[in-house]
Amino acid sequence: MNEAISVSKVVCRGVLNGLDLNLYKGSLTVLLGPSGSGKTTLFKLLTGELQSDNGEILVGGVSVTSLAKSAIAKFRQKIGVVFQDVELLEDRNVGEQIALPLEIEGMKKADRQKRVDEVIERFQLQDLRDKSPNSLSMSERQRVAIGRAVAGEPMVLLADEPAAHLDYAAAIQIANLLTHENLRGMTILIGTSNPDFAGLFPKALVMSTGKI
Image (cartoon, rainbow, N blue to C red; front, side, top):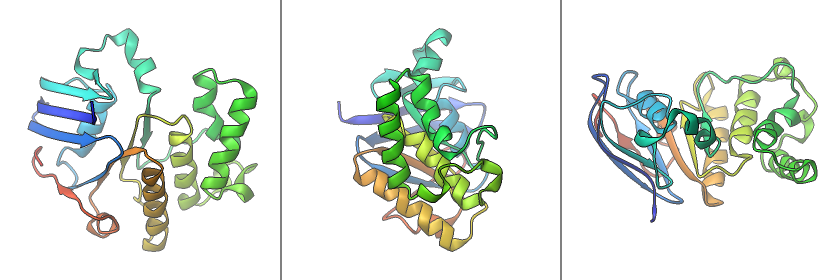
């Protein structure tokens, strides 16, 4: 199966109206649409946070719409998520933030340390490693959030408004980071209401009134 995400005829809360979307493994897709067009609703459906009223959703071959509540937490460990309101744990430094999903999945300490080192280098966070979130700029916080989201090598990365609150130079940096992660083979779905940010990628799908 080459599809990482398959959404078929999905209806949800009057926001999504028969949405269809198929994303192949290793693809990078940008959804461009104004607030209220259904991007965030779609992301929450993909993680199992919301349940659709109708339709079918598959992520990595798993039917999200059929998942038992007891299985959702484990399923979410396989999804990397970055939302516009960057939530970092204030009692953890940058290195510890990135290690968090690896701790949750039970990775051995030595392997965890190696993975954190790799992410720190890839995201150029060496000078920030021991800093707390409250000492970081918004751009730095976003880099840490994305690094944390990809540390566990999830099957897909969902980035909802990843450049919100950033100036254009910082947005370019975030776009470059996401593009690099995609070139490493990660499937990425980005939602944005900013045409300038969407323009930093080869193409974008336009989302309006719950459809693409």
